[in-house]
Length: 204
Image (cartoon, rainbow, N blue to C red; front, side, top):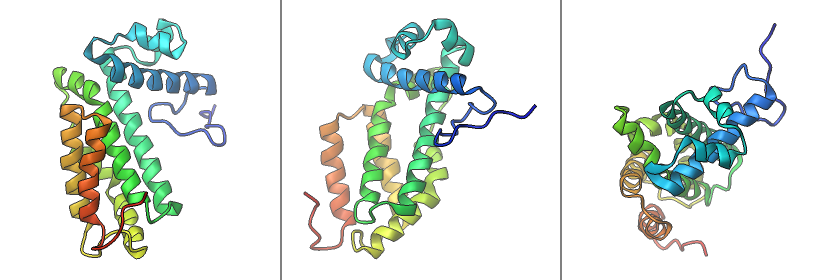
């Protein structure tokens, strides 16, 4: 027998290969619910709450993720897969005037939201580093940057090393301090002003 393939338009989620379509959907629901619950409830969030949010039995959650640690690790792998798909899509046909800034904003948002997940993994002895997470995204970020520079949205003297360094620092801050949206916005406004060519106006 061959392993079932995702339906057209259905994302190839890490860890979901070989699952039936309904099992893949359940797994995706669990991960989405878990990310939301941990972001809202903090370290006190329970697997029972995840099951309720997902609308599934607790046994279904444990079938996919036997331990809380397995669930936390899957959330981070799922996020990296989402970001990889997003940067590739933007690099292919995103708006070159805004895609670099939009992707950086999304990364900082996700870093702040995953504070609890990363903290709980660290308590379990699993130390996740922002720099390591950015490595698989580097080629996509480089293409985003090149397209934005050709469109005149980013200074020509900015390289991918600088963009990755900025993302590492800002995401690290957002992750460990759990920055709210206003602080994210204000910090990124300063970063983006430094990336834009002299005289370029912020988009309204």
